[in-house]
Image 1 (tube, rainbow, N blue to C red):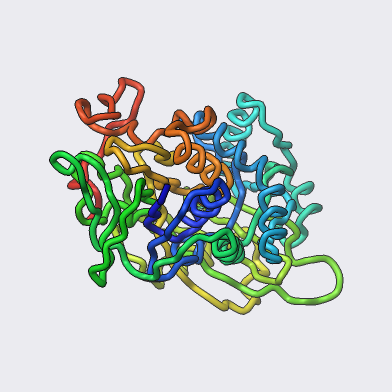
Image 2 (cartoon, protein in one colour):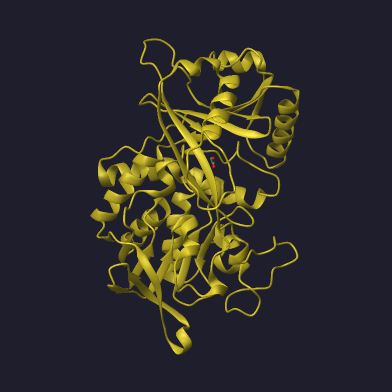
Length: 402
Ligand code: GLY
């Protein structure tokens, strides 16, 4: 069985590695594998602190992936000799004013209803854990189970693991989906930008938000995925003896915007992120940088002393219900692994396992079944169903941001 994977970001790479481990012949098509949103992402594994109302179904998938992370990181290290920067350091979510505190109390109540482990702390207790926090912090949630990984190292290790498992990398752009069969009713491979045709038994579309832009994709199976821009900054923490600048991920909602600080053992401090519905734009803007620094400064005033070493922006692949689209699509021969929105890095282990299973058997494992790729397909399209009353309204390609 030859599997052609379009997209060599973390999701495409983990799918390739797991499929190759199951004995499939695998090709990954990407001009720069190991790039994409993972170059930008902070790498929070925040199943509990990023819980949102209405995403309780997604929580089960997020937790299943979070549980696999330590073993996944060890397996990658063994396969490649590379450390992916998995750090079981926990997270502290804090409130800066009374509105933030009310918001965080609501989140805590939701977490408790979902049976999650999160401990309410006073402002003083928060500052005892993280002395660099602003004196005005009103309270917070200590979540010892939300960890972090370094997405750049993760992508690099997955690339090496794939190469060692026999994955072929075609460093080119996929120019068109090839169709075969009666009336072109089946995906048969891709034509690369240089005109070469790469045929396969199954094509996996794993191009993040770019997945919707593959020419030749029949309208009815274009995944309902849109780009959601995130701007992220990288600072450098001092290497001084004594207590670390921050010892765990710290996050807050400041005037409705998310701000988080992810301190790495290397000294890198990742500060994110904006959330902007601006189509395919990846410009780093003065306004974005200003807002992130302004909000982070309220949270940890001392960070304005740190060197700012990098600014970047990437695109989250947002889906109508904020959950990924996995496995067989309504087009025979085409499977999807996209739409991971805020959770691509977190969901990498469970996505790799789920796609390897669906490629081998045609069926997703139970934990991934609610996130089937055909759940938004219009009624009448094979494998699809009419949007059920409980499902969000599907978006057509025309509704996506230009
Ligand atoms: N999960 C972090 C973000 O999407 O910004």
